[in-house]
Length: 292
Image 1 (spheres, rainbow, N blue to C red):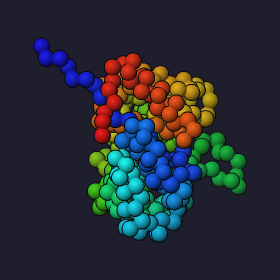
Image 2: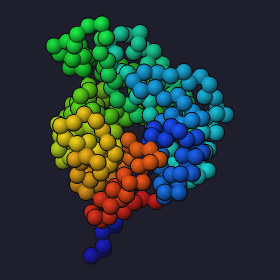
Image 3: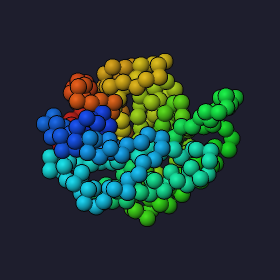
Image 4: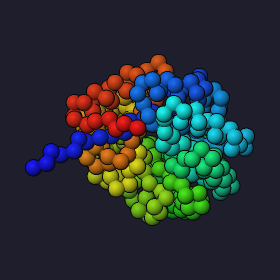
């Protein structure tokens, strides 16, 4: 009998918590820690374009500037797996949704200049500041589901033009509020260009880890590795919450070995502690870290 191949997972980190450093400084820091994969958020000191749940003017991100940013990571031996967009796809105003799709398209152009074709987003959040909270919040109103299916199908058509892929991230208080709801949404959108980023910490209030992978395994192309204490709202670094990391890496290695685990909610002060927590869970469960 041949020995089974060791299970492996790629480990990376999101650059969002490193906003006081330049891209070159982030790249050198992470490479020194043995990391080889990043999820790029344009939030660094020399590329401040990050705008959560909205849009930014990225017209100054010329081919030369994009190449400079991407080269900072590649020169350090790091691969840019994906780029964070996180615009609002459920906004009730059609003009706003159209503008947000145009922004997403602009980010695909930016990614193309960097050689990156995977982009991540949530569905978005919106509350009317001039009116009390409705009896049924916007994400769960009857009209929002078909409207968002239509919006994301349009996004998929744009992605087709750029040979790009969109990963949708769930959050228990948002439109994609559970693993089942994500699956149903992706099935209805029905595009190979739209897939899932599973952030287990975003769903532990409503799903067990086994449920998440049971519902979403065929769709998952990336995972976020952060944490959250049960019955609390704030996300925290890996190891500071209630998530069972040995179980997470075991399930990920079995169901989605092609999907990197991307550390999130960390910066220069605490990423090494979170990385050590993740690596310890992998060692405990016999999962090796994929090199390069």
